[in-house]
Length: 269
Ligand code: DGL
Image (cartoon, rainbow, N blue to C red; front, side, top):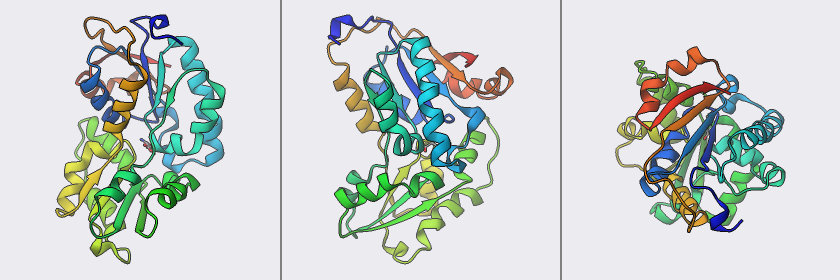
């Protein structure tokens, strides 16, 4: 597609199981402040971390296919590590437009570590993926990669964005899933391999003050800017759309948090 063929109001379509994709959206909005946004949230199937590979590989391309027909985006951002590490290639094969995935930022972590011990905090489904083995082999050979898939963390981030109080033991438990492994005392960099987790980086950092965190959001934003270079954008931010597979009542619980990201129209998908 030539840049001129893309209408100024064609949106960027963000996709995540929940509201984790907001951590990627923030970085994209920094670079492309007037980009029209549609955010598709599969909360009816949340959390993806508890799902099987087969369930995710079947569901994500089907949902995105429907969303692309309905919203005619210029580009799709799978703002979910679990969906990307399992279904990115299937989605790319099925849809005829640029698809940007989110995968654990092991490469920048390997460049940043001084001790050679990196932690990967993700969902249970992400940390067991072959995609992660490959990232580790390609970018962190000879280093120790500790992995912890935490089932409670993404749901706790959702609760925080609903305005609920979260038990701090959840942040401690997640970090100690890495720190308590052999070699964990030497870990100096942690990859936040779930898009929900940067939203609670301060809480996680308070558990292990000497540890640095990396995630892929800034790199994804740079990539989207490159892929859309030369395309037209609206003069002002048109107000983003949030659609969810859950019902309206569920959406309403997130309305305040979503409005802070410019997502002001909420609907059921
Ligand atoms: N935000 C998601 C990720 O990046 C997944 C959270 C979940 O549904 O378990 O992996």
